[in-house]
Amino acid sequence: MKKTIWVDIDGTLIPFDPTKTLEEVGRPGYSLKLPIIESIKQCIKRAYEAGYQVKILSAILNEYAKKDKIEITVSLPYGKEIVKGSRFVQYGESKTQFMEPGDILVDDFSPNLREWEAAGGIGIKVYNGINGTKGTWKGYSIHSTAEPENCVKQFMGILSMIDK
Ligand SMILES: [Mg+2]
Image 1 (cartoon, helix red, strand yellow):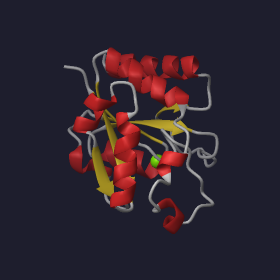
Image 2 (cartoon, protein in one colour):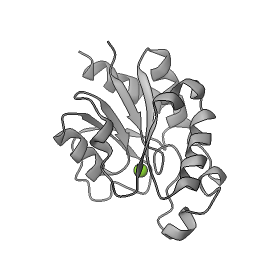
Image 3 (cartoon, protein in one colour):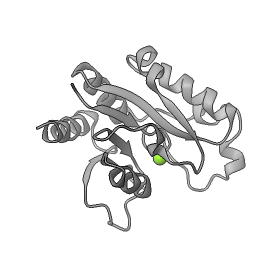
């Protein structure tokens, strides 16, 4: 049985803008205006095609944000399937509440990844061009700023190592 891969949205699948306030981010349609990061979209597609269970796991500020993020999820390749298993946690809540041991989390935020690994999962950090400045993450990682095909190669290589 292939592992389940949970994919974050903010800073992973769409850009994260640290200059925006929570109020701005919580407005209806905020996430929908942002472009989907092609390299992560391709990673999701390839992992799904390789037989992994791919699900979105994203923090939301309110029901508007949830609706927007569901729409983003459905727009992905295989999105109608992916959305069925996807989960949304309230902002500030732990992402580990839906995980099974061994599940993979793809996320740009190291505290989420550390918490995930402490609970028995495997983290893959996404370097998105603005995070990672402290260099504290020592686990698996991919670069969403890379050419999509290179990012997919990094990602699938990590998955094959994890699955051994
Ligand atoms: Mg994030």
